[in-house]
Image (cartoon, rainbow, N blue to C red):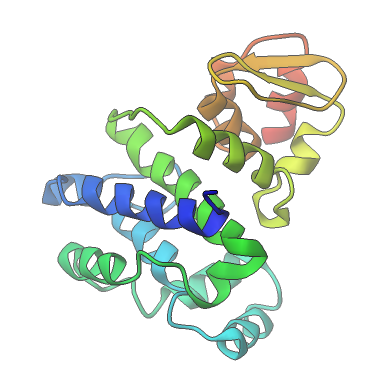
Length: 207
């Protein structure tokens, strides 16, 4: 049986292989994460790997438990690393450790999968995603408070049109599993790829 930790490692492996193909210009391209280029997204993803639980707690306290501040503090040590250094670090940390192993590896899996798409979409480089991994991330994202997917999708029925996955009750929102995931994760613009009577409600919640 493939565990969430296994999937997180597979996702990081896929991401590392993709990043190795990018040009210096693509590393400097804006991502879907506001204010972050591709290189900052990669730095963010690896910024918790060397922090033990004590280090994570100290970062949370220093950041006053505000996600934006916490991420900035964790990212500071990695922001100046070159693409080559970031890729080397990622390849050395394909196996989640520390904080990202929590909840059976769910944190590492959800974070890695969403940020992989944060990089690929602006570059116009889609991929064929493993179906079971996508379905697992969709379900896990709804339970991950930092993602905010639960509140955004409350009272709506989400229906993936390309994989066997649905969730919730209420006005229906339809689209590819990847588009649903990125929309409920709060990525602006992606919601326009969805349809159904619940789409305007979801769009309003994303802002």
